[in-house]
Amino acid sequence: MRIALGVTGGVAAYKAAELVRRLQQEQIEVQVVMTRSAQEFVAPLTFAALTGKKVITGLFGNEEPANVESAIEHIAVAQRIDALVIAPATADIIAKLAHGVADDFLTTLYLATTAPVVVAPAMNVNMWEHAATRENVRVLRERGVHVVTPDEGYLACGMTGAGRLAGLDAIVDAVREALRIQHDLENETVLVTAGPTCEDLDPVRFLTNRSSGRMGFAVAQAAATRGAHVILISGPVSLDTPAGVTRVDVRTTEEMHGTVLANLDRATVVVMAAAVADYRPVVSLSSKLRRGTERLRIEFEPTADILADVSRRKEERLLIGFAAETEHMAEHARRKLKDKAVDLIVANDVTAPGAGFDHDTNIVTIFRNDGGEQPLPKLAKIQVAHRILDEVVGLRRSMNRVGSSPEAR
Image (cartoon, rainbow, N blue to C red; front, side):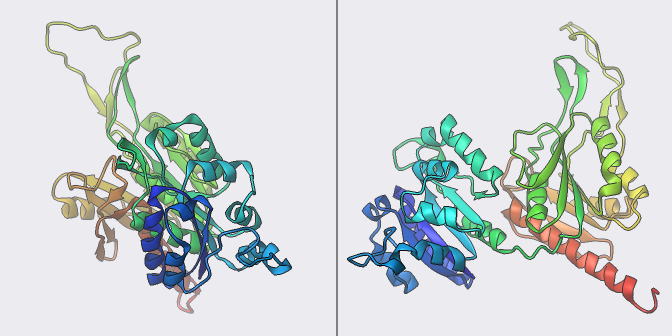
């Protein structure tokens, strides 16, 4: 596989040298393209030594005088790469990409290529949080650009906050994702539930949980990347809709239950990643509950069991459930796998560091209904999503083999 790595002018430019090495370890051929300002931070010779290739530093080539071949070099590079990666990406380059400015080799290459694009921003926290940058990032994501969200921490400017270049693992994972356009789910319609549900006590109070929706959104994003038609049914979260995904927002468990069943006939794979409320108040008050001096007793009733209801209508669909546990994870996961008659249960201990709610990583074990199980190390949630979908692809292939065998016929 071949990629072009665009390096722009920021302090994090030095990290691009290690990124080159990491990509080479993935058997990826790297062609480095540097902006003028990037050369103030790292010399082109560094990347030339690492890649064994000429580093492109200008729109008309490095030769003097420019010739016809150098003048159209951006077209040649655009046609031969499998992905364009820009890391670090400054606020300036992100603005240019969003608005179609083509005033150097890198921005011209972006407009000329039809390959997947991965952008890893790095900048001051105020620049990252500025409305203009947010809007430019939104535009790029809507166009299908893979934006690797920057990390939070101490920045070179002395401030602390979001804006630090994402870890190299996250960037490499995004590149892997961009390059794995094998579309092994292109014949599937994947229905994914994500996020929490809310059950009202009164007009200002409700019962909910800590789910951020990130795991379900990662599954939706990964499935869309692999060619599936994706329906994402989400509770209240503050996440952007992944490119190519049809999203339906709901609030209560009852709304999610009805929306899932209404879309079930269209689905061939169902991934129930939402953390729905298991109980709701029997009575939702019409006016605010006032403070008193006596103890307050509230009666709760079970909500609809969405996973069980989908299981009863399963037919030939593949059904994946999730189990967020605080103790005896394996025992509870195996019981749920059997009781709900699902194909896979993805279980995690939400008390473990780096797992569960409000993390970009997760630590899960995938339990199969044939008795097998696959524990995974701590991975980015997009990586976990792809591992789950790898299992889905394997299950579908097994079903197709059985269905096409002479015994089945």
